[in-house]
Image 1 (cartoon, one colour):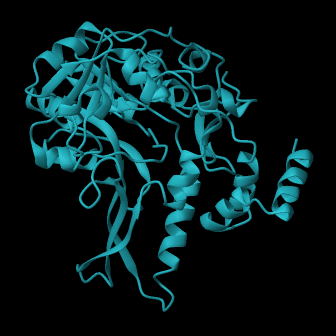
Image 2 (cartoon, helix red, strand yellow):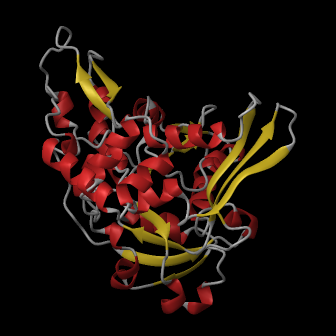
Length: 390
């Protein structure tokens, strides 16, 4: 049976829980806010299927892509509402037009990030734009399998470890399945995200006013462009429907995103990702083409450019069918400016201290300030914590 003794050995993909024939594996949140499998031993029949489908235990082989493209969706409205070049949407629209279903990450009514699916082009907007929180897979693997067995086309998008988990769970290849992973820096804790939102709303509700969030866009391009996008959170007060901007802050200056970019809020498995460098077995990888202005200046209007890594003949076929602006580029040119394609990030020395501050009910700003402070008192406090928490 699956047994997580080292949390770095579990990416939280839920392949084990999804595959269990006795449904004796539940996913439970730990103190850091990440989900891990817990086995009900009284129901387990020791079939070991959970271990057979684990993408950490059964890792794929690292492989370079067949072809790499710089690409832009010619629909400017779609591109501006997307994190990069709007390529996800045009691929997904093709799957929907063929009667298929598209799976991706969206916000629920509590502004948590979950995996879900849509069968309509209108439903794709919920999956568009990056969400910098680990999503809960829920029953998405089993729903995708049901569609595939019905002969319907399925496009499944997710992080590399989620795609690796899906393919392990399915245990066979489906010609009607298109898998698309994302260039992934790492997945932040849902608990840190909940804490951040709670901190933000508490600052706007000192008099007991109820504020309802209406939209969250981690990478809004409208005011500052693609390279300097803002985290924008909009709301309406007292349910009157009058939108107001709670937050509009440069991506790299926001405290939640600062913790993410400093690798402090990531899942333990992200520091030794089991699915990077093509190991996920996906058909396509999508991401921002950082550095495109140095390689293809004509593709850079600061409205967003995607990079597409095509890993399979199926991936090549669907890219060839799209009406997009694209040009082939060298893989090495892409990796230089986006090392997360191949390499996991390093574990910060103060990562555990950061989470200990969150567990003490500190605000995200307090946890960040205490973790990054250069004062002698804070440095000594962190050193003592590291020594006694080993």
